[in-house]
Amino acid sequence: MSADTSSLGQSSQVAVESQPAFTKQVFTKLSIIVPVYNERQTVLELLRAVMSQEVGLRKELIVVDDFSTDGTREYLQKMDLPGLFGQNGDSARLVLHDRNRGKGAGVRTGLAEATGELVLIQDADLEYDPSDFPALLKPILDGRADAVFGNRFHYGTHRVPRFYRYVLNRIFSGLCCSLTGLALHDVTACYKAFTREVLGRIHLRSNRFSFETEITVKLAKIGARIYEVPIVYYGRTYAEGKKISWKDGVAALYHLFKYRFFD
Image 1: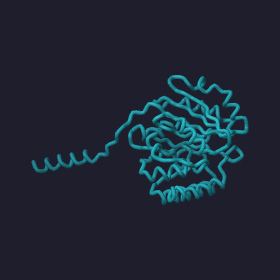
Image 2: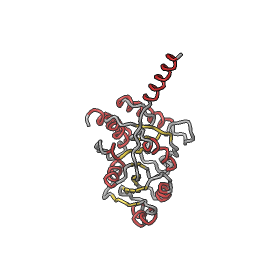
Image 3: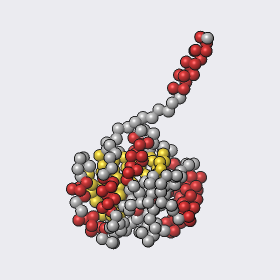
Image 4: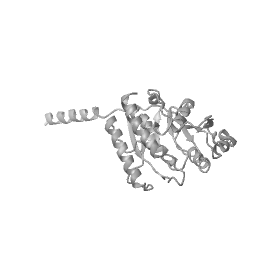
């Protein structure tokens, strides 16, 4: 009887010791980078939604206008971003590109300005819902992840995409996973959150939409801990202002191989 009790005690001890240990870091500031190009109709509503989210951290809003031509640039310049969003320890500022350089360049400009220990990428349209911020940040705040990707392809509520776009996205994500050893469902979603530390370990070069491909490949190369969470997605049509085209898809495929094998 005593032998059985001893065995149970040892088994219990082994089970406890095999639990994974996660070290929680202390984070105080979230930098939110918003690349903007020709989003005059949506940008203010989007910025208000972003800065109204409660995330338990100070928020640093960095808006990067990529030489908009529809009045967005002038509209943002007339806004008092620090006055509108600089309360309660938060801050906001506008950075202007002197020519159109692409989303990836906008993100890199924002990263150069960011001072937060956490970084989150937000598009300036209304396709993505900032109410997903807490879910995106939780795996990092819990000490489990270095990066978190949003996943648009889940069984929750979302706008049904066009069939060909869905199939092409799934094929591309599958190819990316086969080359990186990851098992991501949605490589090209905008919503991605990172620790500043993990971003400091990679060098980003992409100027356009291939940023999503590049950062996925390079995070995989350094063995970053990546989590994925379902997100709300209100996808736009081209008539509603969507900008990514088939040319960006071809470029993403080229850059997938380039960054996997040559950079």
